[in-house]
Length: 167
Image (cartoon, rainbow, N blue to C red; front, side, top):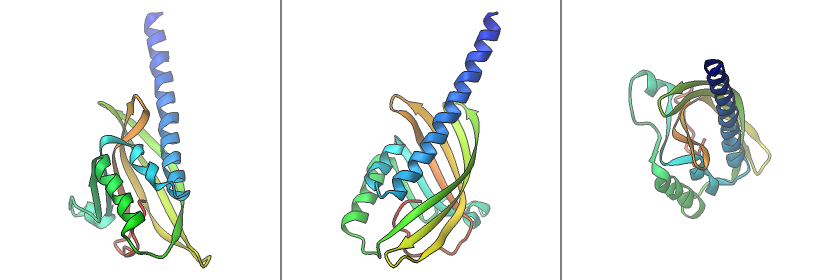
């Protein structure tokens, strides 16, 4: 009886983790789409890593991409620069997320999900900004699920110079 109870508990834990991870991914996209960029670093662990790269770089085994931030401090600096120093045409994102595949690993989960991001300018013009996949490593912390790593892999190597808002 105890073995069955442990299996059921683990299955329940996995279901709860999947729900919590999917909620993390949705909340992340909504924060960016709603221009709550100051909340962005809080989706990561204190030493979390964010990398934006291309499919071509990944295929070639090139470790550095377009953006690389290690730790919440660098993430906060990126948002501070975006708000105070960068000059760009105002625009907004709308993320469309595909289903996430979630696999347990030591210390957390590996998560893959596809995305497309549409960008809308003040003029009302909307366009597909990018499509690709998120490759994430997620951990449960005292504050809930957090990204240890987020690698954003854009399908296209043609990157708009207006890459200021995190994807």
